[in-house]
Image (cartoon, rainbow, N blue to C red):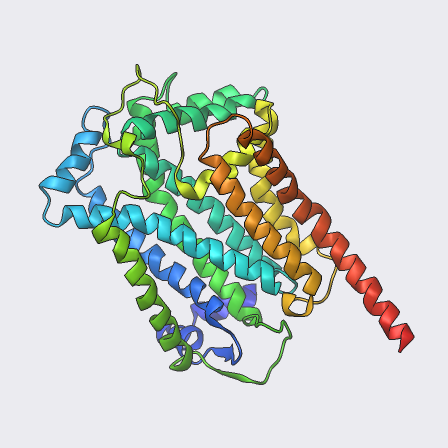
Length: 389
């Protein structure tokens, strides 16, 4: 990989572009679920462009941040559409990435030799979450301020290092001007790290070639990416844009929280602090553990465990098309993830706490128990059938 990367440095850019977007050999049987990665890349570009334009008018100062956002909405030419495209674009970006990850789980895209592709994908997800959280703080509304206070306080659960981390994140001893400046700086920087990780993700993917619905590596039955798949991807993107612009133009605040249109006030606590919808499953995992440190560990473990899948799977069969038992458990996992999202938006009381604990248990059981044990069972069953034949 290193030697090939060095060779790329000595090649004209046009040749690299041609190899990865024009003549790249693509499995002929991939379906529309493979389009979500392409669309996620486009939405990363949308977020970068709209974010740069918003940064031109935003003021990262606690007395002016809320007013600067209102200035963008009311006084900047077309500022309202830039902000709504950016705010709703984050939700669309996460939706596309979640579907992209689900496709990878179903079709076994984490198997060797694509383990590094999968791990880089999880790293991209973690960077996206960090970027989105910091961006959520920038409007400096009530929900922004209290989300920053609550989430950064989670690090205080770690012994010894917890308090220094919180003080460093705050830039002092409370969420204040230094905190807002730091979050603005990181929110501007991290998308470029995401872009670098995406380029590496694509480079590793194209090194081994794309997976396909039957999960079998083949050097035949492949066609060039252009024009066949580029137009297929563009068709999906246009269809998805109808959904995206439906939010931007007709219900731009539907996915947000009304309290964030109230300027931050450290003396008034909102009745119910709720993160953005794409954080709700992990927020439910955090709250399902009654111990603060245990909840924080579980929340971080729910992401780290995704990186472990290539090393804990015990089957050589990639695609769930040939694993009927795994199909059942996979769709149970999808339902479980949706339940966690619902629980994350509910009040932390009975019966929601108990449902969240059951859903959290299944989440970890799926990765640590079902995936490896099902692989062993399928291998033993296959060996038994071969002996019988």
